[in-house]
Image 1 (cartoon, helix red, strand yellow):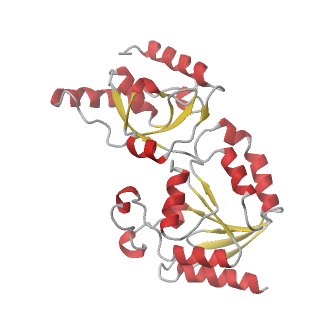
Image 2: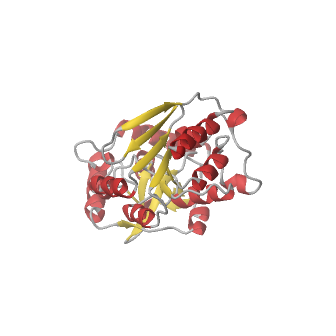
Image 3: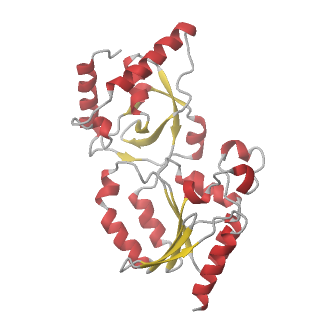
Length: 295
C-alpha cells in the first residue's frame, strides 16, 4: 500500500521514466477485448503523456482521496466490494502490461488502498500508422467526414434512431445509429465518396468498423481518441493534415445543422444549412451533394 504522497509521486516518476519513449501500443484481439474485464493494478501503467504524470500538474490528490474513501467505505460493507462502476480504459503496450487512457485517479486510489484488481476496458485506438494505412487504401479523391457522437449516433434513440441490432449483438454494440445513416452512407458510396468518422472518445477502431458493417454502412476511415495526449499523434498532426489534403482535394463535413464543402488546399469553404429535422436530415444532405455532382 502506498499511503504517503511523496512516495506515490516517486512511484509515478519511476513509471514515467520506465515507459516514456520506450513503449508502443499493441493491437488487442477481440477475445482479449471481450474477456479481459479485470486486471491487477500493477499491470496497469500511468500514461507518460497525460497531465497526471506531468510534474507541473500531477495527480489531483483531493480526487484521489475521494476515491480512496469510496474504497474504504465499500470495504466496511463488503470484504470484496465491486468498485467503480465505470471501468478504466486501457490499451495493451510493448514491452509489457497496459497503459491508462482514462481513469488515472481511480487507478491511483486503488494503488494507495492496495486494491488487488481494477475493472478495465481494453481498446485499440487509432494510431498514426492506422491513418497512413487508411490513406493508402483510399478509393476516391473526395470524402465526407462526420463526428460519431455529435452526428452519427442518435442523441434521442426513442425518436430518431435506426432499429437496434438483434440479440445478442445488441449486448455488445449498444450504440444507436441516427435515422437515415445507412441510406446516406450507401448514397455517398454510390457517388464516389470515402467516408471518415471521428470521435474524441475511446472507442476501439475495430468495434466501430464492425458496428457499421452489421448495418452494411461501410466506412473508410475511423479515427478515435482524438482528444488524447499522444506525442506521436501531436508530433505528426501537420504532416497528417498535409497528406489528407493531398489525397482529398475536397472534403465535405456534415454537422447537425450545416454541411460544409471545404477546399482542402486553401481551407476556403461553402456552408449549406440543414433543417435539423430528423425525418428529412439525410435526404437534405443527399440533395445538396447531388447538386454538387451535377455541376
